[in-house]
Amino acid sequence: MIHFDWPWMLLCLPLPILVRRFMQTAVNAREAALRVPFLEDFELGDSSARRQFKRWPIWLAVLAWLLLIFASMRPQWLGEMIEIPVSGRDLMLAVDLSGSMEEKDFVLEGERVNRLVATKYVAGNFIERRVGDRIGLILFGENAYLQTPLTLDRVTVKTLLYESAIGLAGTSTAIGDAIGLAVKRLRKHEDSNRVLILLTDGANTSGVVEPVEAAELAASEGLKIYTIGVGADEMLVRSFFGNRKVNPSADLDEETLTAIAEKTGGLYFRARDTEELEKIYQVLDKLEPIERDTKRFRPRQALYFWPLAFALTLACLLLAFKHSGRI
Image 1 (cartoon, one colour):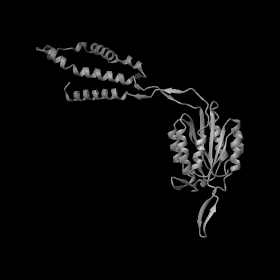
Image 2: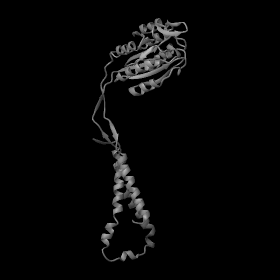
Image 3: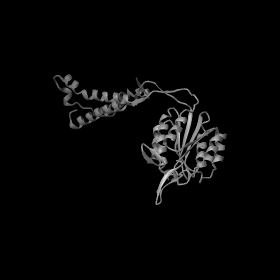
Image 4: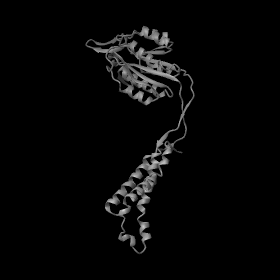
């Protein structure tokens, strides 16, 4: 159906008639003493047909004015009512961008990739499935930054996650600052189920807030934290003396990550490869939300540019005929 946002613009419809009437009265009052007959006033013959022919520019001008009024009323096409499921969960993702995330101990589609690439792939799919949740994104390294505030626009969150790069927030790891920033951003949403998913591959080596202290603050605010430690337990490295096994996750502070999760009522997960990381996010998919009323909206499509374009076209035609001397 067609809807008008500004139907009161219809009151402007008689405006040209009023302007012409008052202007003509003023002109006649000034030039009454100078009025003289002209030859065309005494023309004989079928003058009525000629007058009818000369009226077509007026009809074109009237049509252009009607189209302009129609455009100014802001016509819109309203589509069918659409229901949006809103779960009531505010979900914040905190992703580690420190230098250690560059370690290539994950395999994705048969190719060895670094930890951040694997995280982007799995977390991106996770974001796509979060229909109805408000999702935010925090990137942290030496400092913590809010990359995306809470939003229902999952496409934007996924895009900004994919655009993140290792070292963008510094080379060290500020886990406590990331938690503190999440608490600050989620504090205003007390009526929702607030969750923070924190993914890191190391220990807290930077920042002004200790992770456990930040977790205690999060617990007091009702924020539940799920922590994910990423990185393989062992990896073969080629050297001059042959292949040897190393532990690329030696710096991972699992004890602190476990304490953070326990203090806030969450869970700690260990992701040693892409498959385990995918399973973790599938478990997180099952978190129960707080139910809210379903939101409804009608999609709107603006139509004003069509009558406006026709009105401008008619006005240009009238102007061109006037300059050519045809009217």
